[in-house]
Image (cartoon, rainbow, N blue to C red; front, side, top):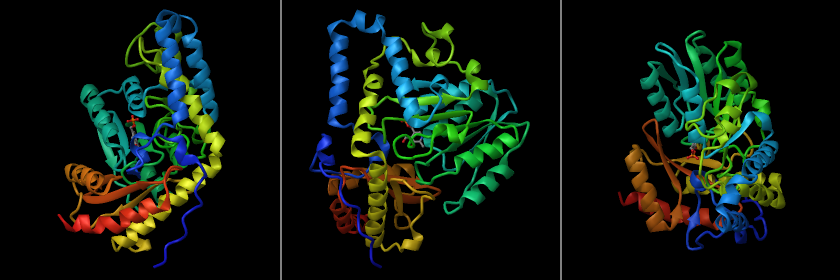
Length: 393
Ligand SMILES: Cc1ncc(COP(=O)(O)O)c(C=O)c1O
C-alpha cells in the first residue's frame, strides 16, 4: 500500500529549538518543547526577578500576570475576565472538582478515554465527598454522533453533577465533538468540564464556541510556552464558586485573581508565554497546524506499514489539525501501563526515538506526534528499526 507524500518542511523551524539532534523527538504531546527564543524570554524575566526580587513581586506583577492572561485568552478565543492562569491542566481539573460542592450520591460522569491523572483526581474527590464516579465506554471508532448519543444516554439528570470530557484524548488521540457534548449535557442540566490539555496551539476551535462550564488547557504543549503555563476558563454562573487550591493574598479579589495568585512562585514562565505564541504566529499558525497534522498522519502510515497494519486499521482522530496519531502494537505488546512505559524507554534507548507508548483497553498503542522540528526521515528510521525491536521481546 503506497504511503502519501509527507508535507514540505517549514524552512529553519528546526533551528528554533534546542532539542538534542541525536534523538528523534516524536512525542511533543507529553511535555512539549520550548523554542530557544521563549527560553531566552523566560531567562530575561528571571534575571529581572533576581536583580530585585522585592520590586519584581510587589510592583506590578499582578497586573503583568493579568495582561498575560488577557493575551493568552484572546489567542484562544476565551473570555479574559473568566479565565485564570494556572500551572497545568491537572491543577485546573483539581480546582474545578473541589469547587463543585459534591455530596454523597452525586455522580461525576466521564469516559474511558480520560487522562489517567484526571481519573485519579475524580476518584479522590469521590472518596472525599461520598460522590460516585461512572465511566462511559466509548468505542475507539465511534463517530461524533455515536459519541454524543452515548453520552446523552449516559447522563442521569438530577444525579450527574459534572461531566468530564476531553477535547482531544491522550491515550487514544481522538477528537471529541465537545461543543455538541456540552449542548446535550446542558439540555439535561449537567455542567461540563472540558480537559483541553492538547488543544491550545494545535486546534483552531475557540474556547467560547465550546461553551463549556469549565475548560482547562495547556499552553506548554502546542503553544510553545514554558512549562507550567495553562488556562482555566469558567462560565459566568460558576465564577463565584471557584475556590483556589491554596488560599493566598488575592483571595478576596474573587475569580480569576484568587486562583491565579498562588503566593511566592516563579511566574516567569507565564510572563514568557506570549513569546511562545509569537513564535507560532511568526511561523504561521495555520501553516504549523497543517504541517504537523500531515506529518503525524505520514508517520502513522509509514510506521503502520512497517508493523503490517493496514490503513483501515489505523485509528482516525476524527477531525482536522490533529497532530497526534495512534498505531496499534502487535497483540500482547504494551498492554499494561508498566509494559507500555518499559517499551517506551526501550525505544528511546535503543532507537534514539522518543515516542509515547500507551496502553488502552487492554491493548498497546504507539502514539506519534508531528512538529515543525520533525522530518519525514525520522518516522522512516523508526519504521525501519521498530519491527526488529518488537520481535526481541
Ligand atoms: C488529556 C490530558 N489531560 C491532562 C493532561 C495533564 O497535563 P499536565 O501534566 O500539563 O497537567 C494531559 C497531559 O498530557 C493530557 O493529555
